[in-house]
Length: 213
Image 1 (cartoon, rainbow, N blue to C red):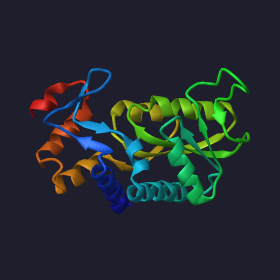
Image 2: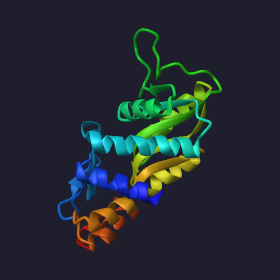
Image 3: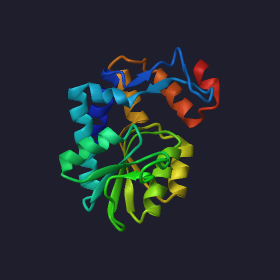
Image 4: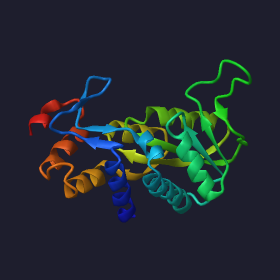
């Protein structure tokens, strides 16, 4: 499993889907300074990397939740990944809107879903986990049994971990920040001494002292 995590980390770095810049931090919408920027949508435009990532997602679903009946993507970033992984696994898929439509059948959940069906949620990125937990809650309200979440990448932020625990749902990412910085240092995207700085950011994102470490 660690080999898969490292391979996915390599692919994300090679296509710029995850970009590390500890010397010149990015600014998040919240104003927080961050050494990392994620845009996993780039996976879809890189066929070789896409194949690696989608097979990793499908493998995790099959290994961890063999009883899965439906994959549900988060809107919008998880939709394509859920569709491709579902095709690999031969499973139905759908997606959950951030809010119900204001026209037609006013659906929030798109795709056929029967009460009691066993569902795995597909997400591209876990940070504070708020949006994917909303998806889980919507599926539970519709009568689905949510087995868990499979995501492509997670920061491992404490707030996200605590929220997932409180919602009684587990997330399994195909790669994570610890693996990513290790691979990034080996492949010269960052210096080895930057690893501790980046992980210090993860430990307390609002504390900018990591920048001068």
